[in-house]
Amino acid sequence: MSNKDAMDSWPDHPNRIGLRNFRWTIEAISDWEEIWNALWQLGYKWEWQNADRYARPFGATYKLFGCHNDAVKLDMAVPLPGVEVVEDLRDILLDDIRDDARIGHTIGAVGRWLTKHQGHCRPDEPGAVQRWKKIEKASTSAQEGTT
Image (cartoon, rainbow, N blue to C red; front, side, top):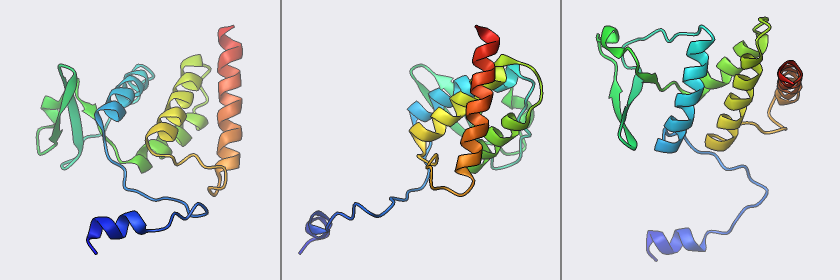
């Protein structure tokens, strides 16, 4: 039996939660670039370190690089953080006390990005219920402020 046959015959386990490593795709980078631009406008910046990954637009795609003693040259580059940093960023935004509707919109964009590209926003995840309540509150406040 070949490996392919073994994989095809493996039974589905609908009660199991699938796991995977996060991978930056062109679509994820494109969606993240919009979020990064919003963060920049809100006054957030990236603290570059060696080995950080970043992207630069190149036509319909992106060129990907690693930072190595060249942070000065990274102006206008889009940082590509680990998904844990994006999750932490969402929590930082939720704690931001400024009265700015863009914060609520950015929180929503980060949550949608995580759901679409990583699938971490599960209701049974520890702390998810409190986090979603904070997200809903911030989104509602942002919508009320813009209407």
